[in-house]
Image (tube, rainbow, N blue to C red; front, top):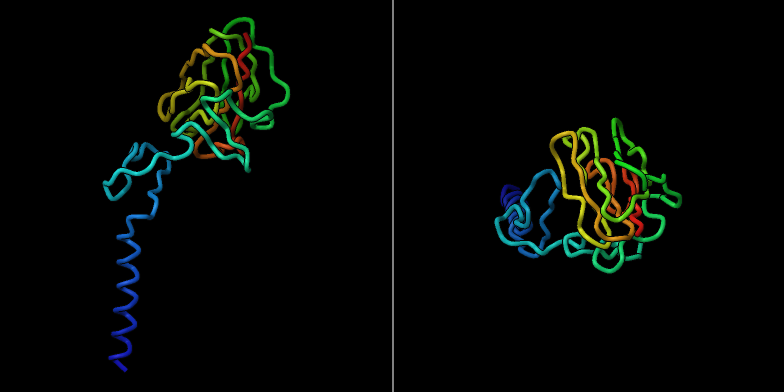
Length: 172
């Protein structure tokens, strides 16, 4: 009986070791200030679709360099007009306010809230404007190119626009 038990335990150990040393397994970056391009095994990892400028949203590619987000990103079909004056998107809880904002090219938008509780990241857009932000309580970004820009909380939303996410429409 002990011979069979040893064989079973030895086989399980080999399977576990093989799983740990599988170079083809993708590394997981939780977006919490992690490895910035290096997997947990200290080998370079492939850039994610988002890092390469596109995110798959239910079969529709969101191309950062090819015109922005898919229409209706984050459920935004109408936008709060913020084309006059300074604009702030606040997030005291689990929603952005306003969630869907329209501004003009050259206008800055300030995000105000706890970035440690709600890390901010841009998911799509015609240019990279919204820097990944995970600390502090205020950050401003100036939009210099027209188009639709999507953003989300990396803890409570998704890059495809569900959950805690919003959009900024930049008009000429």
